[in-house]
Amino acid sequence: MNLKVNFGKSFLPLDVPDKNILNIITPRNIAIEDEKKVIEEALSHPLNSVKLSEFVAAAKNILLIVNDGFRNTPTAKILDAIFFEIRTKIYKILVATGTHRVPTDKELRIILGKYYEFLEDRTVSHDAKDEREMFYLGVTSFGTEVYVNNLAMKADKILVIGSVEPHYFAGFTGGRKSFLPGIAAYETIEQNHNLALNENAKTFALSGNPIHEDMDEALGKINKDIFSIQTVLDDHNNIAAVFAGNIHDSFQKAAEQCKEIYAYKIDELADIVVAVVKSPLDKNLYQAHKGIENGKLALKKDGIIILVAECPEGIGNDNFYRLLSSCSTPKEVLAKVKENYVLGYHKSAKIAELCDSAQIWALTEMKPEDLEKIFIKPVFSLQDAIEKALEIKGKDAKIILLEDSGVTVPVL
Image (cartoon, rainbow, N blue to C red):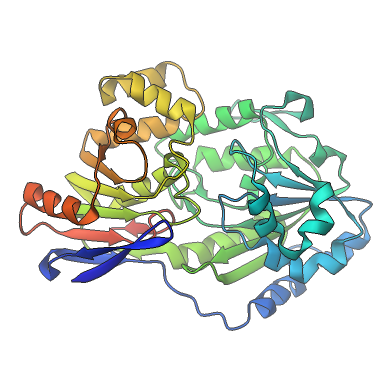
């Protein structure tokens, strides 16, 4: 079978014997003829909330929270539908970066679209490490000290535009994640993400998931009137669904729709999984790791997972890399994580755990030695890697190609 596999902005040819292909998995394509109509319908029928027009009319000043360039959130399309209504009440636009880097000017132009020039002087990128800009809200029942950007506390009301995708430890992105980690302090994010080591912190899990429940509890401490617009995208980044109104209700509905699109039932596990990560999650290894987490759900014990992600920005998180590269064995990594958790260590632990039951290979633009130091085998040709993997696992070994592994979730 002749295939084309996404790698950055290009495609790699791949020829695999038909007998070895177990599954080619891609998100379901949801045909929406009129995105504007879908947005307008959601705004006309808000969930457990007044309409946006009433929300805006009653506001003195509104903080607009938007996602950064690591999400494909259709912020500009939503602004097309609401900008005229909100333009005089928006006092600040806060980009919810969490611990990500600050968006580039190019990314901000994409996020805000044609409204960039009008909103540029009111747009602020959250800096999780700037303690002077944080406001303390108390402690959650999980022990997380909640500090958020004080712009949220200065606002009369908050309008948030988000997108909901599968997330390997928070269950889903979107909703409460715009606040934690989105606009939270570094220490708050670190304490919350420590809960990612809990076995109930996994893809699609909300009830009983300590990460989600802690985020939800932190959100409740903000105690502001919030209007939420949550979107769900298809594999081509087109809008598949929009839900607006109460932040909890809009998120819940979006999560249900998200699972319909991105959960893919499989009948058996594969010997080899090719986990392809697309933009924007392929910017660095720290983000592309999500593809490994989803890919491993389709992998047999002692299997081989091949990550395909360009990673032009390299590692993406110093703590994550520093821990892995400082240890001689995966067991040593796990011991250090247990001894003293630092933000980023949850991903180090996930890689170390997987190394105990599988091989991780990766085709990237990173330096080979950087991968080797963290227990990942660098490969330089996808075709050669597949052929080598078949030599190791046997000529009848089964392969699953996960075409958008950053968001597509195999379910056995």
